Length: 304
Image (cartoon, rainbow, N blue to C red):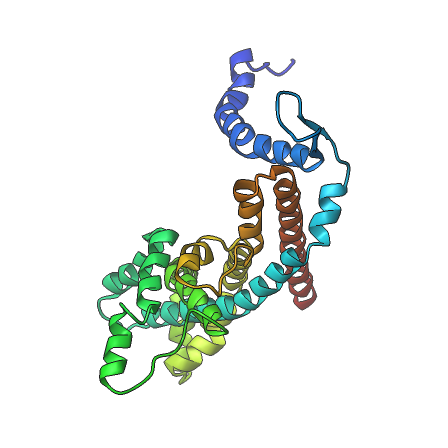
């Protein structure tokens, strides 16, 4: 006897459920990416003085925009500054997130729910608002911190120029991102069986030894995940330097790669070069992300 065939409506039901997500993905993700790739291979040809209709025509540019982007010293300089910024930001943010998660997971902690909310709350503040808030605190003329240091006869650090600028920008991102990463690590800590802790305490382990020998090794996948997210966010830094730019001359309009894309597209009006630079940044991010995941998986497989 042949098995009963599903009704046509049942066969189409999965596609109906997937249709809204597929439509939104196509409209707001795949289509803009495809259009940016299309623009990256185009350029404008200007005839005469560029006046009148038909004086500016869009033509095929081949790899010209990519060649210009990859040989642009401003893009390479921005990438170097972003790497220095990330070298300060990622260890500080993940270290603080791990410290707070371990602290909140200790049995003797009080007001744990309030503490978690207080640490997570900065993540809910938009990046531009956080940058404005910290930017005013960095200005010696209006900052209450500089006022107190001056009253105490001390000179405050210059956080809006030189190497202090990296610290100032990283501090904004650490303040806003520590809470999210702390929640990820803390959730992983809560999934560890309590029997492991009880056995370790019976063996005479202190809370510090439990944290170092049990908790941190078991939340290592969460640390890898948060590092992955933090690395991608670092490569896409934009709102912090863009918001602080009017407050200091040390921040150029091409301080980070995305700021260069913004300048090319909306200040200079060269959307074709900006599209090529965007594709280069996206490809570099993908290569670094998948390279990092590949390396982690290889080490994990080797360890197992």
